Image 1 (tube, rainbow, N blue to C red):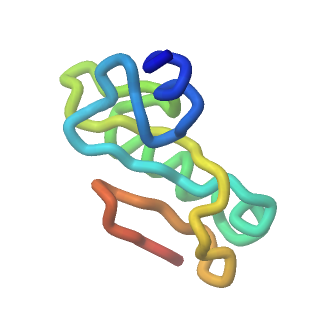
Image 2: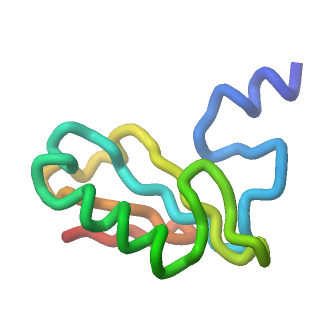
Length: 85
């Protein structure tokens, strides 16, 4: 079914997920290299909590598994654009 398939993938959402979506890699390497500081800063600056959006629906914050940038962690995707360290 469509809902089961969509819910399997991190980048598909079945409910509002923000106009701008931020996916922060939560690998062990990221957590050894500043992940927690980035996690806290993103929540503070956007007003959103991870797994949801801010009240206005502008920003959506999500954790995701490795995005293939372990040598540059912490890494994140903001609207599909990669940001590292």
